[in-house]
Each structure stands twice: as C-alpha cells, then as structure tokens.
Image (tube, rainbow, N blue to C red; front, side, top):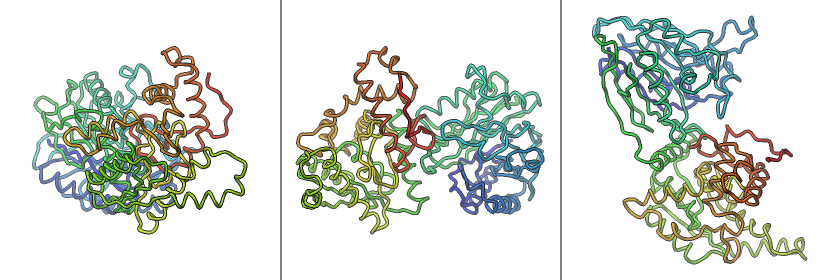
Length: 562
C-alpha cells in the first residue's frame, strides 16, 4: 500500500489557498497510486495561527473549508488534514474551547477526527493558551481499494505526541506517551503530522528519536513536516520515515515543498526503501537555506516583492545582501550606501564591490551635511558637553531615517542587518540600524556570520575578501573598531552561548576559563539591553534560543546573575 507525504508551505489564514494546495497534493498522490495522503499539522490554516483561533468566524470558516475540501478529494484516496475543531464539552467540563486536530477525509466526508494529546508550552510554543489536550490516542483502519487488498490499522499522532519517550530523553515531560498507547492497540504503522520549527541540527535529533521509538516498539513511523517561513519561525520540512528496525527509509528534501511516496509491504509488515535526500553537508549550508527561505516567505507572505538595506562595507550587511539577493532576486534588492566623514575609503570600496558581485541595485547618499545640520540644531542644547555616544548614534539614526523614507516611498521591505552578538549586548542603535521590517541575522552570532561568508565564497568571491579580513567597526568616530567596546568576538560569542543557550552562571563560565571582569561586563550588557530587544523587528530563528517569541525576559528587573 502506497502512502504519500505532502510537505506543504501553507500561508497562515489563507484557508482557500491552503485547501487548493492540499487538493493538488491529493491529485499527485492519486497519480502515484497512493491510498493515503499525509499533510502537516494545521495544514488547512497554517501553523502557528496564534490568536486567529480566538476569532469564532475563523473557526467557522475553517469548518466550512474542511467540508468543501472533503468533497474534492479524489475517490479511492484517504487524506489526513490538520485543522482546528470545537470542543463540545468545553463549557460542561471547564475546558478550552478548541482542539488541535487531524481530520480523516475520504469518499466526500469527514470520517474521523484525532486530537493532539501533548501540548507544548516551551520556547515558541504556547498551545495550552488555545487548545484542550486530546484524552486518548486513536487509530483508523485503511480499507482495501482497487490498488490494494490489504487493510492497515494506522495510529495518528500530532507533532509533540512523538516527543515524550522517557528512554530516549532520560525523562518524561508529560504524563502520557501516545506512542506507547498506540502500540497497545496493535497498530501496523504510526503516522505523525508535524509543524516543527527549524533549528540548527534539529533534523538529526528528530531522526535519532524516531529511530529509537521504532526500534523499541518494532513499529514503522512516518513523519511529515511543514516547510516555509511564518514570521520569525522557519519550517524545514525534512519529512522522513523509519522502518521497524529504526532505519531511515525515506527522507524528503529540506526547505522545499514535495510529495513523496513510501510503500507499506504487507509481506514483511514494514516500509520499503524509498527516496533519500541527503543532509546538508555543513551547518552553514543548512543555515543559509533556512535564512533564504525565511526572507523569501516573509516578504512574499507580507506582500513585498523588493527589499532595501543599508550597505556599510561590513560583514553583516554583506551577508544580508547576499541572502536577500538569493531569496528575492538581485534586481529586487536595493543597497543604500550612506558614508559619513568617519567612513573609511576601503569600506566604500568594499560596499561597491559587493554590489557588483551580487549584481544588486545601489544608490549613495552621503550624510555629512545632514550630520552638520543636526549638530547645528542641537548645539544650544548640547553646549558644554563632550562628543559621545549620543552624537555617534545620531549617524545611525540619520541612516535609519533615510532607509525608512525610501522603504516607505517605494513600498520596499527594509531589512535590518544586526547579528546576534550585537543584539545580545546592545551594540546597536534604537531607531537607527535596528530599523526594519525583518532582522535577517539576529539569531546568527558574529563568528557564525564570518563562517557563513567564507562558506558562501567557497566557489567564487561574492563577499569581497577585504570584508572578511578587516576588523569589524561601526565607524561612528575616527579609527573606531568593535573591540574598543567589546571583547573579541570569539570570546564574546562563547560567553553568550554559555549564558543564553546553556543558562550557566558567572561562576560556571569563569570555571570554564574566562576572565571574571569580561563575564561580568557581558552579563550587565545583556541585562541592560533587554529594552532594545523588545523594540527590535522580528528576527529569523535558527537556534534553539533566539531573541524572538520564545525569549520572555523582563525589562524592569533587578535580578543579578551570580
């Protein structure tokens, strides 16, 4: 029996478009003689719909669209569709009004509904805000048709339902284990419909986890995942299947829509070997694919076809420009050079070289005279004070104003270019270089920015060589370099990783060989900069701990890390 996996890229709230894509996938599945089609979690409305589900009309329209889709499914094909359904017992039992559900569509009607049991509330997830947990795991019987004589008992799980194997994790995060429950029912195969966001290396964890579960319970598992960018989240797809031995026998290509086929062999009651896409060769390749997809989808789903960014001749803006050119096409990217009296000649040359290498559009707006106007206007108020951070930041704010004006005038998406290291310690200017509709590399540390640019240059020079070798500088005063204010980035990024990703204390970081004074300074900068991060544009998430929807730190706090 052939089972199709539809790796789809839904647009949140665009119910008719999402339904059409499911219908197209259903037709492809029929053309490949599939008996069952799997689609991702909440495939009909897109994940995560967030507070849209609190709108009663949204839920009603979902129900109407689901009923209409059921009628359009080709005869002989069963389809599992992710949707939201009402909880009929909510008011009686004091429960949430909705379920995160999977609907089984076949022969023109909704045959069965399965409700997600494990509702994550960590990191970017907040599902208990909206949904009631399903009370039990369930299965359905896939009856024979003209293509097959076998009946399959298929257990249905939704995303997090897979992530509670105490043998794999060394603990249970939830009371229930849906996989164990389904095994007790004697199912032939388990399917999982997911919307699992991307982070570096996550696919290897998914595959290891499912290999363990399949081998432990001697049951094949098929996993389908959403792809696409939705706000700060990127979904990588990488749908796959494992046989009873825990061997990966199918893997769809990451970061692309796809419909793949896996076949259940009744003779050995297992899945046969199928298509195997390769893993990304390096983490840099993986991150690049994620960021390009994130920019492309954010722009298109928000109605932008062109992007603008400031080009300083530095490493960060160079990388963002390259990502934008790949995502939107070179002709749709406008780089603005805004040299000041403190800008070095080599930075201007480097920015111009980048423009030529990427074949993007550019325009130069010198800001020297504008700076003089600001100085003249503020002179009576600033009299008797010394040149300092306020005057330095004026340059960034002038540039930010110019970029916003151009973006506003021509309807471009403004991309901000700050990296994670800068966002962490506040080495960025509110209403200046932080201006933008999307922070492309705000979850990419400075050292990783350099690594990505070196990887990008592996075949030809896209990022000018001088950009890779010169000391990073904001160039807001004469001979300025970042290390005037910050530790070397290799040291800074290691401290930040221990602090942000591993929640280590100052004592633990010091025990790892770092200087106490540097650690203390970094911790204070991170704490004091929270107000800036709260006002930053959404940033694409590529790690397991980003400054986005999953980062919930207070601004007004007197807690001191020890």
